Length: 279
Image (cartoon, rainbow, N blue to C red; front, side):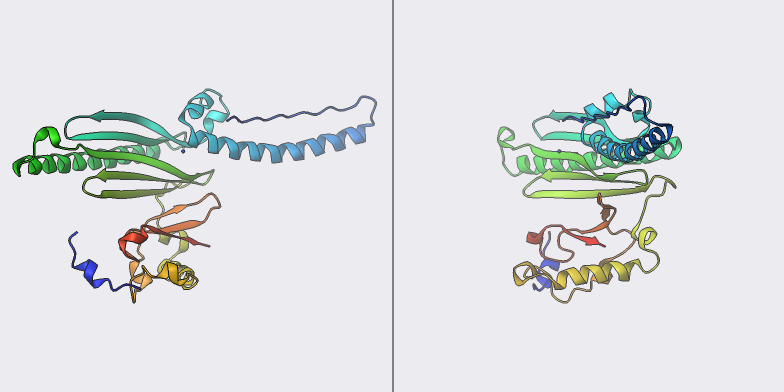
């Protein structure tokens, strides 16, 4: 384990084939026909459930598929997260790549609009902040004798990733990366209860004892790490002190919460962001 004090002092993305076939022979008795019908209905229900799961995955992985599916009445009703806007531009100071997500077909239009506006504002503010920093960096470069034509444009990227989406929850993350002297990243997690419209916190998920519950699972995972993994951890860290209602997390496809600790929270920067599945 590492003594954290020195750090504290440092400034710092096919096809979906579905074949449904069946035939009933003529001349069979009514009872056997009924049994066959019941059997096909049962299998059809399972196939429909599997088909729905595949469609949800496709809708969220491919904006092209999502747009095509939205023209089909039944399929168009599935809630999804798609790209609302995408743009790229560059100048002598910066190059910017942005993808902005939005929720569609939630079934709660006012909540959908509110969340989408919040997402768009968050990304707008992030880009403005990064552009201002890039401008300051350029001006400082020139002021200290650097030639404008020798300045390397600053990279600013904003993108998103859908972690899971089903009939109950939508979980996705938006991230921003700036390539200055070193890469700098920010992550914004959205976990939405599609039934109530709530933006979920760990307390909503685990109850009032969420800090103890999460800390217990994290500490158990850490105890099973070998020495090659544990070397970067800070010494004498109290995990429970790091847990709050604002702690980052997402919901994985298995319906489990995955808590995310940013760089430097549990370990030195070389360890990166650390994730723990809370069973």
